[in-house]
Image 1 (cartoon, rainbow, N blue to C red):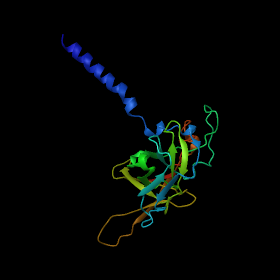
Image 2 (cartoon, rainbow, N blue to C red):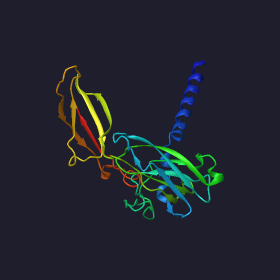
Image 3 (tube, rainbow, N blue to C red):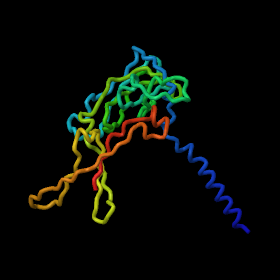
Image 4 (cartoon, helix red, strand yellow):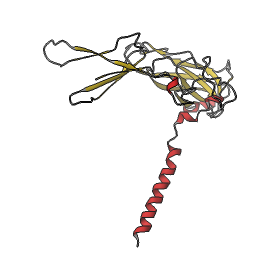
Length: 248
């Protein structure tokens, strides 16, 4: 007789956990109402990012830390710093979602952000410094200072662009088991279109002798904005994925 109440209690506990999961699993970038953003660039505010050339010492470097310094005459807890890629996120044009009354002033959502007061003393001095880790995403980057919080963002200042020395470089190689025993699949991402570069995999057995490696051609795939189901993936959420190359 005592089993039923225990089972019921367990079920209710599981239901409570499940109901709480969606709120806890919200993607932070989805909180940004980029379609509502307005532009009010202020001459007294600034955003500066260094270094300007990423991966200068090693063009195969695919991860770099960038230091961003910023200032505002009217610092607020609602101020935040956004990272955009491509760097030109204002002048571009994007499809106008039918549910919005007008064309968004900013056609690209940021790829990451941080509140300005993450920098100590920003609210007191109106100046701050934050470091962002960037990975090579086949395009340049810019940093922007917003006021008004995430729900009513106002663009206040924009940095000059920064870019990797070789933004199209093949990066992030992945290995996986192939379709058959003894087969290995190699996949990587790059900014090169099939018309720009001939992809291949060079492989062989590592021995003490001077063996000749084998070169095997690889296939390249990508997708475009039209492949997406709808907004925001086709609009402010769209970003060119580059080319994915694979060889088994």
